[in-house]
Length: 282
Ligand SMILES: Nc1ncnc2c1ncn2[C@@H]1O[C@H](COP(=O)(O)OP(=O)(O)OP(=O)(O)O)[C@@H](O)[C@H]1O
Ligand SMILES: CC(C)(CO)[C@@H](O)C(=O)[O-]
Ligand code: BAL
Image (tube, rainbow, N blue to C red; front, side, top):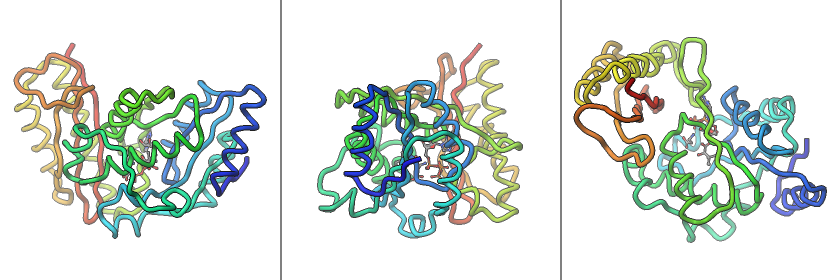
């Protein structure tokens, strides 16, 4: 596995693959890797000859300096996992490589970035769209994978690719979960044992909603039921609850008749966990 810490090095490596006529897939990450990231690698490997992973903790998508400072960094373990998963190369730049002249030029999906979870984390999706554009321009992949757990992020990237005519296929990957249902996330390692035990409530609340949507319900009844389920535990506070069209993320009301994305975020201490489900009425 090639380890490329500079833009010229990853570009030269990709050029060598292209010279052999190989296709290239990209898995952008912020490191602290887990089985969810490996699912992205496997998904890309089904669509491209070679998989390139990136590890870059992107400062422009963090509003909260403490969240950025505490973001887990586990480089050696990450490289071992990527190697075992068959990744061809890892691009691990420094902040100065990606933002040598600061962050004057930005990419923003002006509507999608500034609704729902984008209001909980102002500027977040602008930072994501900007860095993903940079990674796309540096690596030039044929396909790239993103997890459904970060559902609004996935929709932001799909919209950006359509609007900017970026010739890259985006693969959505279903959420990989712990045995009790908690969505795998790098931030889970920072939960206290009591909060970790309580965090199962996110997926439990979504299980309840999925069944309710399948058998027929309204947005307001669904919202009530999710709030009640989250309130059964006293450690986490419901920060965001969005019941929206699964593609446009536009809020819906009344009876649920079409595929609907239910996105929740719950705060445990200083850690915000997110999870989502797309539910379809029978
Ligand atoms: N449990 C999961 N299943 C599938 N994909 C995932 C999962 N967790 C993260 N991903 C995807 O992996 C990519 C990189 O995510 P990232 O490095 O931020 O990891 P993370 O675990 O989501 O970290 P955090 O949520 O703490 O920021 C994103 O496309 C994200 O959606
Ligand atoms: C896509 C991403 C790697 C961009 O920094 C990040 O938002 C993430 O890890 O989901
Ligand atoms: N997985 C989304 C990246 C972030 O939380 O900043």
